[in-house]
Image 1 (cartoon, chains in turn brown, green):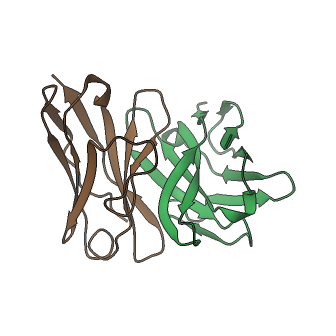
Image 2 (cartoon, rainbow over the protein chains, first blue to last red):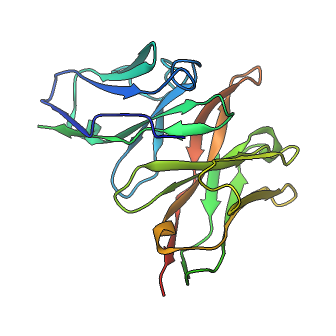
Image 3 (cartoon, rainbow over the protein chains, first blue to last red):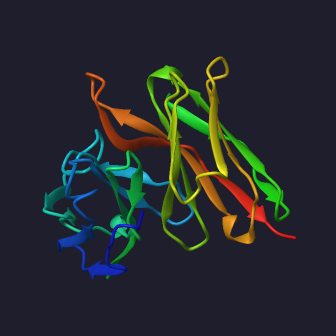
Length: 110
Length: 124
């Protein structure tokens, strides 16, 4: 199972919005609404930010939102804050009943 | 509170095996499947497999098929991941993570609680 494709890096200034894409195939992202997004700060365990494409767990800021179109899912962070600087990973359920992660995106807040 | 506590760091020689434990507390262990995920230094997250903690059924990534074994001890509320035939490329942090469900029991195929990670170093 190949990794989902994410941009290696994105950046934005405080207060701006950014979007991170996650491209797969019809056997994973496009075939199921089981796309999740994780935030990982250096040296820390990942944290679930979005599940089922667009749902936020309790306690996650509403500045984080998710969507999907075809084989590509997206994570949007609005009103960027310094604490949002981290690595972000998407994940999807697959037709093989497994999960697959993306390559990860480093978000820099300028 | 809900937490997953993993065993300590390991140093292994190439060709050896390693077994990492993940003790759950604060919830009913057998009601939530458990995933195992690894992350090599500076690299992406990599899904290894998961176990239905209720009936013991497992599913593994093809990448690790034949080398990884995930088990659980329901009495100890603990999941285990054993990786064999270790090589230097297996040097990584290994995480256990709980699968997330709806209130009606539908799986979200997402990981809502993570262990602190266990560093495994493979070196001769």
